[in-house]
Length: 165
Image (cartoon, rainbow, N blue to C red; front, side, top):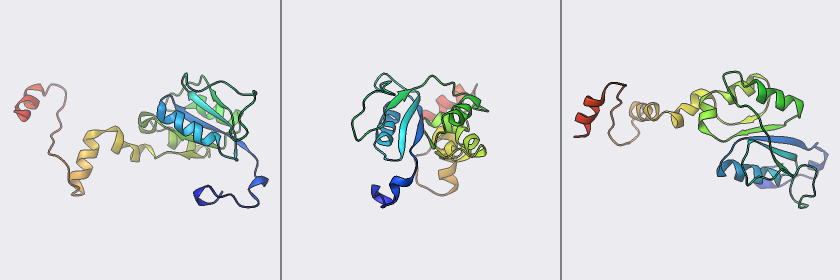
């Protein structure tokens, strides 16, 4: 596939492969739905998925879509062994990670270590979304305008209250 969804004359020669979307929210549903429209995707597995995603694998689908299927899959780090096993068992061609917490836990790094194609930033890069303290320190360090802030640790309630007064 070329840019902007334009397929080359030889695109049909590529084998269709499953995709796996990790997450359960509306964002993941939208990602799964769009992946289901790809001519290169045979089925979109969504773990853990949600009620809006049907379990239609093996049933008639619209001619322009691949089935989307919820799968019960343990997505636990630091090894993510169930995710890796599922990808190998089902010959998954692409994993798309939705929730930032999974990215912050290192799922994309682990999949890359196992040579499984994944769309999502590394654990280090995901910190900018997962940790507001990290993001604010990053912005200050690189002189990116942001509101004033202070980070407080557990037990620092008095200091936090004094700061906001």
